[in-house]
Length: 327
Ligand code: HEC
Figure 1 (cartoon, rainbow, N blue to C red):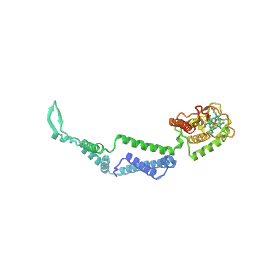
Figure 2 (figure 1 turned 45 degrees about the vertical axis):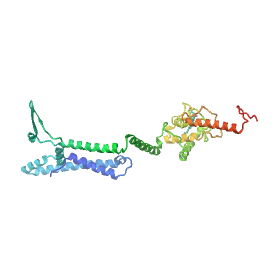
Figure 3 (figure 1 turned 90 degrees about the vertical axis):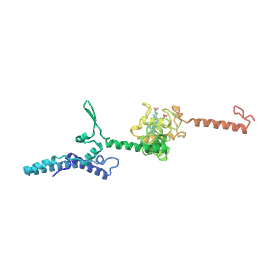
Figure 4 (figure 1 turned 120 degrees about the vertical axis):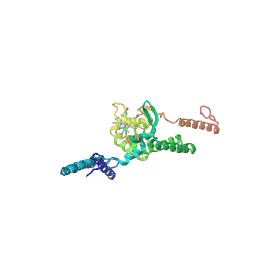
């Protein structure tokens, strides 16, 4: 019995083959099967033990059979099993690619000159090197034609395509991972289902101190423009997440609410702006002006006002500079 492969190749090979098949056939979602199902891991350990067991049994059978052989047969057996397992194709290929002359034939290629006993062999270039050199030439020609003659694309286009693709991926990712919001990325949510979810959270957790209409009680009025801790989605999110000033009663909600839930309730809170609650608490804090409000908007308001002025002047020339009608 002559084994072609040694045991340390056989066992891992069969083991990983079964492992691969198992992972392929067991649908375990994102996680690999042997993590998702402890049974699968136990099965693989069993397979490993089984394989080792089989090897041990085979080796001892071989040993027993060996003892029954005659001395001459033992010798023959030893000779055949000591033959190393070889990958002949690989070995021949390696020799061919190296292309060096065997030591015995070096006499044919030795050059005549002799420097203090040092002589030179006229070896051929090794085929692996030559083939690679030819490949670079082919590559160079194709490259030159493609990018410098037919101008396929340049680095800028390549960059832009990749950025667009990545941006699309990010957008897709964000859509599926709303829960990843934090104070830096949170945006005002406007979708009806987000606001409805925010309303539910507000009515369960916040009404006790802020009232259902946001008018305020223990907590401040949320319907006015005044904010103690800053308005706008980012500040409101931050207040909800981290809580108010120490000892005021507004706790950090990040322990009990998920990021998405905090974004939803923050957006819901901001929807109170401009509404009139039944019992409004007196305004606290400063009027919040969004520092990121686009400049154009402010400009637009000005120009509307000027237009109105001009119009009024044209149609009613009876208004003086202070705006009083002078008939
Ligand atoms: C135990 C009472 C209490 C509860 C419950 C409570 N808050 Fe508050 N909230 C307060 C107080 C008190 C303040 C003022 C904190 C301060 O002055 O630092 C406040 C401040 C705020 C502010 C900042 C207002 C401003 O003017 O800057 C927001 C926004 C807010 N709460 C939202 C919520 C939300 C959303 C919930 C529910 C998840 C909630 N609060 C639950 C008591 C409460």
